[in-house]
Image (cartoon, rainbow, N blue to C red; front, side, top):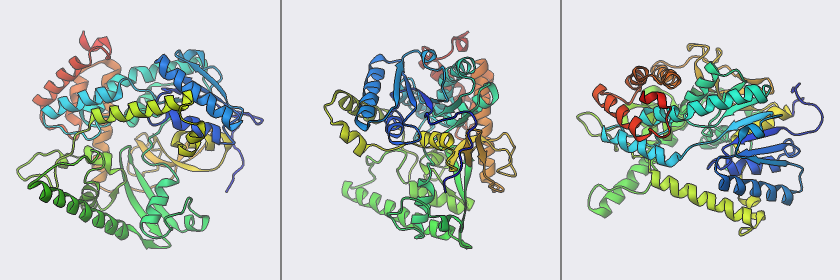
Length: 482
């Protein structure tokens, strides 16, 4: 249902000015152009692209201008390597930057693996999450200060991992309106996926009909990447047994496929399954049986719990986590950027950009906020009573109503015991990481490691900290080395 525009900060038909800091973003750079051009709410606005790499900036701004020209819309494209040149008049500032993402994740994961800590993603929890936060927090807070000075009425949206840690840093230490996002729970995709899974909607459904929505009691909540499907009731019938049956079927397939590979190789073998996808149904099924709720983003959640690290007397079933492949990610990022260059220079027809393109969670949210569309999305923000047995300032990923006044979390109810313990430990790790980063305090950094759910040995923690600091000396605040 289209709702009346509740935005009181803009008038007329102009679109918003969206500043993207990190124009070459692997996940967001191309998608924001596609959405900006395609959306009637956005395509009369301004897209300001910022990237410190001049070559990347030229590629993305040229691609944006070609897309605008081909679509015949009035989007104004600005570009600069200096963010302060384009922040004035911004309505939204989206943080999508990273400094040598794959390289540093590889460094973090390889050093952690030496000490028996296995990370399949390496940028949200564990040593990888902590150290990415140390790298990114100073820049995030510096950008926030620029926004406070130059565009104080803008919404600052963090789209950089670790989303919760950086979101907490902004919530506690920035004076500009802000929230954080992750692409792991996009709407309407999330609800559609589960409704199709249990057979309520057909596979070709593209939206949730009003009559289905009216019968649905559905709740996903938790710390980003540690979110859980807590409740799924349709027309008075609990759908969780069907979710479990789906996981059990896929878990059996995963095990059968591994057994076939093992038999063909004459013994246990590995495969090329991406680390964040391998054995996800097996891990999900086990966690659902233990906690009574289904992990909503298992590709990350399996990294947040200690059970799949490989410790203990008995072997981990089916196997310990597969380590993040930094070289593979770098190849994918390079290929993606080469694709952008081919669109920009005309080697690939711009028509293909529109047929191959897709929208993005962040610009979907901006569209809904600016247009007053009355849509709800999963956003990382302060709890404010949504989860009734967690603190109001617990920084959680929650389904929120949004307009230009910001996100308002929808009620969830209680977080079940067990899952709540995982949430609180993770939040404490994230809060300690923020304070360690702000003060460059090695004692607080060790406390963050000691609180982290996948660190079990203090001597190893001290050694990891020393090695990780030294390996990243050139990109960390110099106060760490005083």
